[in-house]
Image (cartoon, rainbow, N blue to C red):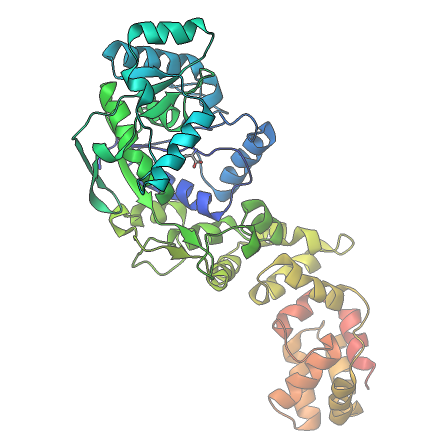
Length: 467
Ligand code: GLU
């Protein structure tokens, strides 16, 4: 693939960006990045009833948060502006004029009710419903007559008979469609706006898009789009139709599978690098096992490795990537990521020590909250079983521990040595009671690291209370 690769993401802003669309965006972005090409963001906001400006803003924010960037888009313009489809009426009008001049379209006066009746009749006769061609055969006087009645026609594409429309799909390989299976389709609605799959195709052509990775649900429209572009003398991009993203239950991923919008995942504390790494392996196989950064991921992306089988969303895997991503956070990034649960009234050094101590033990910021309580609030009250274990260790144990804590500035090694010498205990018989007295828990972050976050006076107090 050469440097002239141009890919795009063309979302309809009718809702929040969810994992399925994010995967499509990521794959197109990677395809552009791996070849030093361009990535275009076009907002397909022609469904005025469902598209809102808020969704457009949220979409841009979510894409940026995920770590994607674009050379051309509604926020930054570019050589093929505008990048909001609703503003491309003049471009579309020029294309309609070209189709008319080429004689490949005709006005259609059929009403929605007439079309529905025709479809029902076809279904009843066991035929696949498609436009019956009623207005294809109207002669000039008949058309003039209808126009004179004030009827506003849509514009239909005259599909040529007997054609084989073939292309090599980047995911599915060679595919072939018969034009005889395709009814004449609307390219311009009666209100003058572009039909969705017309605007989509001509905008790709106008923006120089060379490769389109999109959902499999658009596959059936591809031969129509190829006919449109051919009639306009425009190049057809290479299409790749991505397998559907399903929930664990085999049903297309949706709200009922829980948090699947990027906003929800971000609010839970998911890191963008975790989501990118998970999506990268969703319907795309790769020999790379580790967490990949953007450049390595672009190098490793291979459209030949896109799978045809539906991909299933597995929260446990996303979780595993999140864990790997959290463990790789730099101290500063970890601090920012945990900010919402960190106390504001604690010395800087203690917070830094705390973050370092808990990071290996948390997957989401909320997981750190109980440890904030344990370390920065009152000494933990022990449960009955924990109190028994502490009593079993005995007052000498804790007297030695508290004294060593005081003398050794709360350093764990000094405390452990003193307890060993005083009691003759070893290993878990030393660490277990210490951990219980200090944290109230049998498990948790490394004790030595936690002690670096705890004020020495507090360490002495927590140990000394059992002496
Ligand atoms: N606006 C369409 C969608 O959101 C894009 C289809 C395409 O990628 O060609 O589904």
